Amino acid sequence: MSIYKFADTRMLIRFKAQYVYLHEALADALLMMVQHVQTDQFPSVVRQMLSKDKTSAKTKVEEQFQVKHNIIFG
Image 1: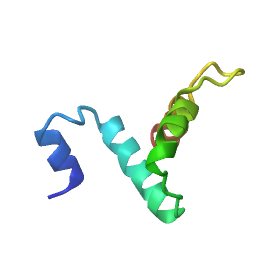
Image 2 (image 1 turned 60 degrees about the vertical axis):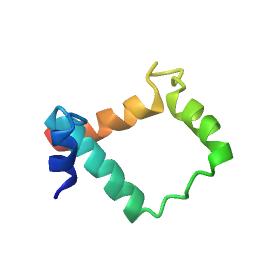
Image 3 (image 1 turned 90 degrees about the vertical axis):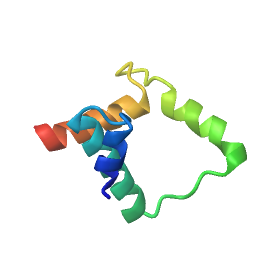
Image 4 (image 1 turned 180 degrees about the vertical axis):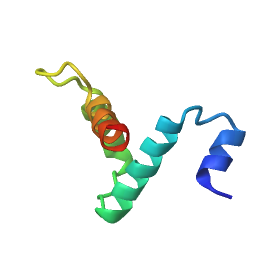
């Protein structure tokens, strides 16, 4: 069973763009050998990812989503 079918049956992913983003994020993490976040570091990593950039007023998560979206959909 693909992750898309699994998530779709549970209404976790509702739009193709969400699936594409999730797939790309997982692929990037696996290909780039991203360091794992320790449990005690997780809150600070989440705060960092959700903090807004001063120039764009977007969070790092929003910026990454936009990059992926632009790559996939132009």
